[in-house]
Image (tube, rainbow, N blue to C red; front, side, top):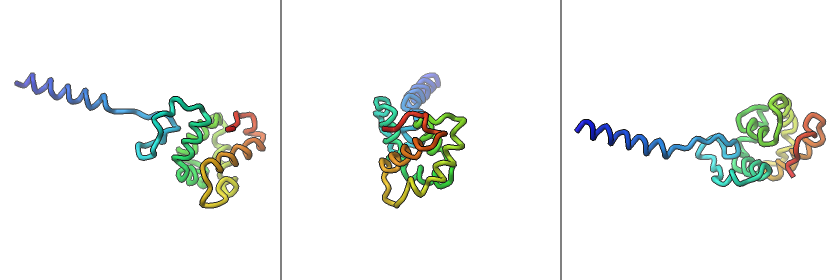
Length: 132
């Protein structure tokens, strides 16, 4: 009887462990509540960046205002900002916050288009791939 109980417990643990998913893709957000898309594996970098910004716009707004944060770091990764340049990128977005978010109704697409223009105009970041 004890053997049967052990087998049942092991089987139940195996089934529950098989249902777990670890998310490491920055484009899907950091939690299940962020609404990340299950199709991000089939998106190109531009689409992943746009989806990430759309889903996490308020978090990005907060991180950019503060000049730091996990969502801003994820955006930097999606934008191919080298890790050595990320502190400068964080300060850049904080300095450009009013330009990036001119109104409370600024959309993710608007913010990304403005960010791309501003990054292209800055010699520190102009060598990276463009969003468009």
